[in-house]
Image (tube, rainbow over all chains, first blue to last red):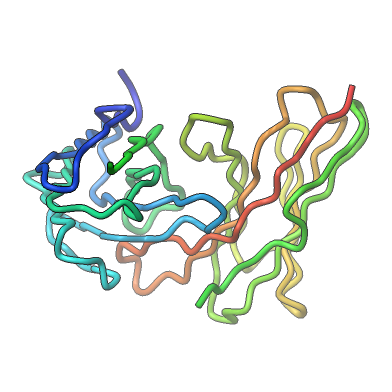
Length: 112
Length: 115
């Protein structure tokens, strides 16, 4: 599969669960991002990784923990989430110095 | 707060007509702008981009116009088709030395194509 792939597509979890979202990019990009998309709100940038190092964390609660083991993979580890964390979580990638960002299809997360 | 925004949450047009979707931004340092299309259940899909050293760029059936004086961006879609129904977002970025920077998005305009 080409582009940016996210799994799972849908996830329902309880507030005491621990789960992880996975993102994989097949574009040879060196930067990856996590965004949160809630209903009726703009996409919010959560984390930025460049060359596998985190370069930005936009005041995201510690119950969200990103991991970037290599330039092709990005994870978002989730634990003790709240119902208001229910949203579409989108992964994107880009090549630094080059125009363009490519998004995955997202993981629809529901916290119950 | 947001540095980009859109004027209308919903825009309804007749099939075959031209559509214009507008976006205002407030960050004068923004130098790269992108329009995305998002269909239900999918991630944002790149449509067209423009850098701040240009004021117009054309693609296939789409044109982006940039007015830096009033910090305004627009997306024109010619001869709209049913497949154009989606939510359209503008996004901006202010590059800092070519490093990785995330995008700042507006709220989105839902384009509805009437048959």
